[in-house]
Amino acid sequence: MNKVYMLQFRTYIQVLSRHKEMNAAEKNDLMGMELSDKSTVVVGLFQSSKKYQNKEYLNEMFTLSKTRMALLKDFAKSTPLVTQMIEMADQRFPYEVLFQSYLRLLSDTVAFEYRFLSQFFFNHNHDMIDSIFDKILLLFSDEFDVFRLNSFDSLQLLLMIRLLEMVNLNKLNN
Image (cartoon, rainbow, N blue to C red; front, side):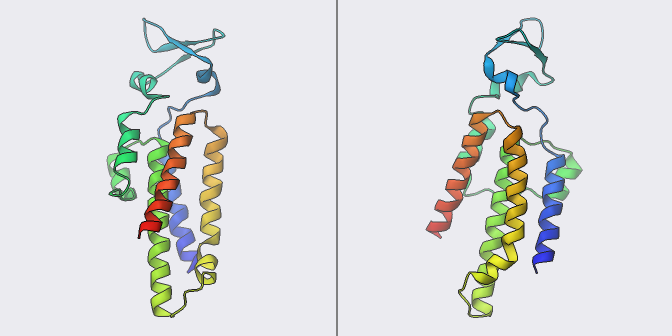
């Protein structure tokens, strides 16, 4: 069972990684920015400049944008992203949306598998569920660590911590 879930989750992560938005905050973006009137060229505090493809992204980089607010408000109603639909539409998503989808899929799968194991085998021991999902949790942890080490958007990281708290609260309430 471990191999089946591992293959499914690895494929899910790979597909969603291909549909991640490429606009991300960099270490130069944190030093203070002044938007040039001419175009989407941003001049940093120490005169390093960067050209952005998406001007709206500059307004949302270090703020709680509509997408981020929707994540916090509608977390209980959220569903994991369906990879086939994303690939057909060729949509791009910020990493926090992908992270929410990872969390939702993982928490739902673990909950349903635990419920099945406890009802079918009359076993409420966590050893079986640990043996099934330990490598999958490591896979998600590695995926997040790669992102975290390359991320300079502190609000994005705080939002993902809040999403983790919401999963824990949702788990306690159910």
